[in-house]
Image 1 (cartoon, rainbow, N blue to C red):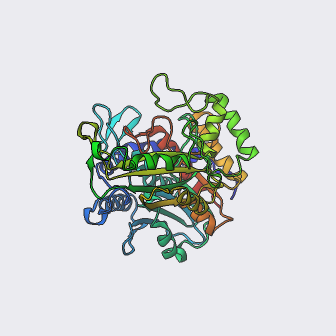
Image 2: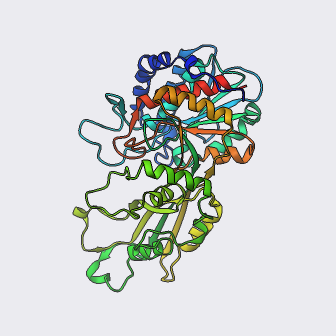
Image 3: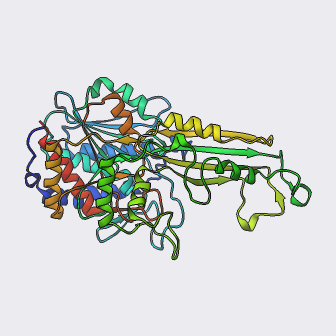
Length: 462
């Protein structure tokens, strides 16, 4: 890295104009495409939504600058990757994002819907706007604002991230000769605690996702006949969950899922942030008691703690449809967040061992994803100075760092292959952005600032 690039030369006004005139209209078109990740749309290939999103983004990239080498890379049975190459020489800077989406989930507020973009002031609502449809626009616009970047730049936009990136490793292997050894990786799929500064991500939790099904009958029977005789599939599953989580406290009890504890430097950063952000941003119901009243403990739990959530169920009819029937089976989708330092494979093995019963019920486990957590390498001074310059110009204050509770499989995968590569993980996700939830929203000023950060990082790279 050379000395920090002067953020002012990136022309913030031009970046802002590009967002208003060239980006937002196409981002709205992208929002209308239900390009669900393959875990939520097994027929994605036949349905064509992911392909449609890739083609829309490809056309937009080519419209920005014909000199950019842009293509959709396909592999048999895999979701596509959009690859943009500036044609430079040497080992590249890689800028990462993804185009696949989570399902709509829940009721959106009046006037909003997952696939109809709605702008209200500085906010654009719609599924995929913030997670992670903006990324290709920010990456390409940042590249052009930097005059094409110094040296070679590759922009890689995948389409299976929301499923745990099962197709990414195959694409990285296919593209390894073109990628070479990255000299910097910029990941645009993260965020922070506010919209008043740039945020850098210092760690990510890992994730395990599994469907667990318990069968006790070949068909449902009258509860008056079977109740008290045939064991309930729901009760068996409930007991299995107690092998994983203490239901009284929400604490994970499997030692393989707990990690070694938060490093002192990360805890010190969290303690400082907790003074500024003492309240939880979660939209809780009135009177709800959080798992911990302490703001430091909450931030530690969010970034370095293990947690279990049941995110889906099958075999359970809606209450109005439920009769006096002993149901034959129950299926629960489990989502486990893992501390950044936990080995995902060891955690998977422990989870499978904990899902057991001695009652003779048939148990089926489908492990959908096992994503490794990630701890960022130390940030070099020149990169920190570049991010500081942009954050001060945009917001009048320095950037901040925080761990994120989510997962980005791309980062540990790439870090494993290139352990010496520096990383910058940043993004637009912040309060009320509701990634994965109803009313997902992109904070447009933050998207403009992140775009300028990309431009400055590419322009300062030596």
